[in-house]
Amino acid sequence: PGLGPVFAAHVTDWPAHEAKIMAFWRNAILFEKGYDGNPLAVHKAAGNVRPGMFDPWLGLFDSVLRRNLKPETAAAWSALAHRIGQGLRYGVVETQKFGDGVPKLR
Image (cartoon, rainbow, N blue to C red; front, top):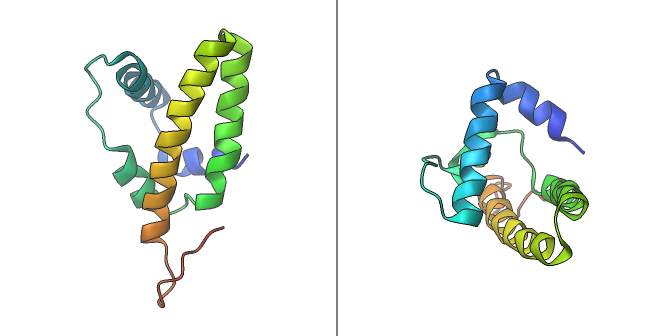
């Protein structure tokens, strides 16, 4: 759901990117140290991330959680992912406004 073009434009070293994403989620879910990135800055700077992309991405994430985790765990991790997604979406909207301050929602 729109992931391919975003990643194709920005990721050249997949193993390094996957390691960074895994470190992010280990930090977010398990409170393990090791992630040193800034997801909001990355999403804002990408230039091709739109607010309307987050719902399909989160839906895909939720389907993976439901297939692989116990329902209670999937629900908890999904709630966390949706809170993170809401923050990222808001950050992207703030940087993608028309001149009169109206956000670009798609």
